[in-house]
Structures are given as structure tokens and as C-alpha cells.
Image (cartoon, rainbow, N blue to C red; front, side):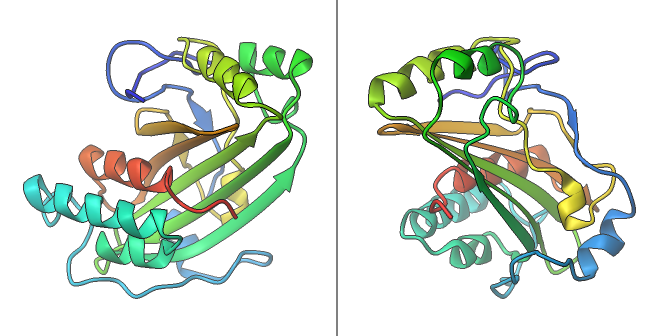
Length: 224
């Protein structure tokens, strides 16, 4: 799916990303990422030799790393996927529920009122390179009872200003001032399931090209 920039409430328009503009938490990001979080899943993986800033991962090198990372993600190897991008997982939280209406906004929410989802799985994770540059990644898997319902949802979700699935609150990772703009966004449909990924820089500098790559990888992560 092409990237897009939306206004308040999400949706698509020409250009990269899906501008939803959601503030997810508040505090000292770098400090929070360094500490532990009650209820967070254990971090995994070892950082590769390079970081994730545009200065260290760019051009053909970035494309090569991204493609290799996608293969790892498709094979269910999340830690390996991030390692191939020169980073490791710091923290991750998972939430499973059926509250698609409560977890959505705008016309996406209205869609769920007449076409309920079958499942909603969301993760929020923080990743970092060896230099301390870090990013936050949100992924949502929205399951439906049929492929036609997933098709209908995709048509609504990709319209500019239509709303979105709300990412998990960054407070779950003790994050601060992380604002999901939707500019680094990717989505795909997998049978009767829609997968949506969004990324943002959390500490230091993670360039937009790298954030785009992270979203493209995250959308292939295995459902938790």
C-alpha cells in the first residue's frame, strides 16, 4: 500500500505517511528506554555493527538491510529482523482484545459499529542502535470474519481523514513526548486481516528514510 499523509483523524492523501497526529505519552525518553517496565515483554537480540541513523544506514545499504529484515520478519524472527537493521529491541508490550470501536477514531470507528472486528492485537516496542538513537514502533493486526470485510475496512481506512486504530499508549513503555504523526506508515492486507504499522523517532536522531524502512519491516512481523 502506498504511504500517505492525513490530517487529524488519519486517512490518506498524496505524499508519504498517514498523518494521524496522536500523542501517546510524556517523560524522559532516553532514560525511560534504558530502564525496566513492569508488564513489558523481555527485550531480545544483539545490535549489529552499525546504527540506524541515516548517516550509517542509507542508500543501497538501507535497501539491502530492509529487504533482509523483511525476510526475517516474514520467517517469524523479529529479533533477527531488527539486528539486520543494526538495532535491538529494548522493550515491548502486547495487548489483545475485541474493543475495535473503543480503539478507533472517525469513520474507522463508525465502520466497526456495523462491521465488528473478530480480533485486535496491538504491540508497541522500542528499538535502539549502539549509539543510543531509538525509535518506537506500533503495529496493529485487525482480524475480520471474512476477506470481504477486510477489503471493506481497507477502503475506509485508506481515505483521507477517515480515522485510524489508535496505537497503544507510550506510557506502557515509560516513554515521554512520543507523537505518532502517521508520516512513517505502512499497511497490508493478509487474507481477512489488516496489518498497520507506524514508527516515530524517540531519542537521538532516526531519519525519515529509516523510520519508513522500520514501518515496512514491522508490517511483516508475526502476529503476537
